[in-house]
Image 1 (cartoon, helix red, strand yellow):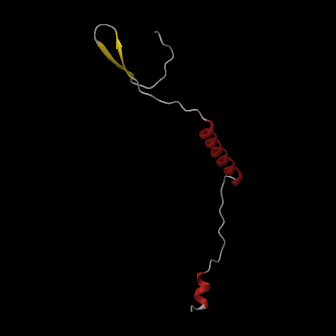
Image 2 (cartoon, one colour):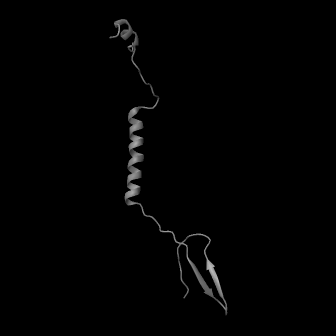
Length: 79
């Protein structure tokens, strides 16, 4: 259907060679380490649940609404 000269003209006449300054084994090792660290962090990492607490603090006859501007944890309770 096509002439042989046309088909021969479109063929790739050289080879593609990719050069990199970083060796492939080093790229693979770093990528594998990052991926493994990410999976281990997802599997075994500990996560802190964040809560915003709104309450009342009664010092005198009238109530005062107390809320924390940032999340945190209760370290001591003086009750």
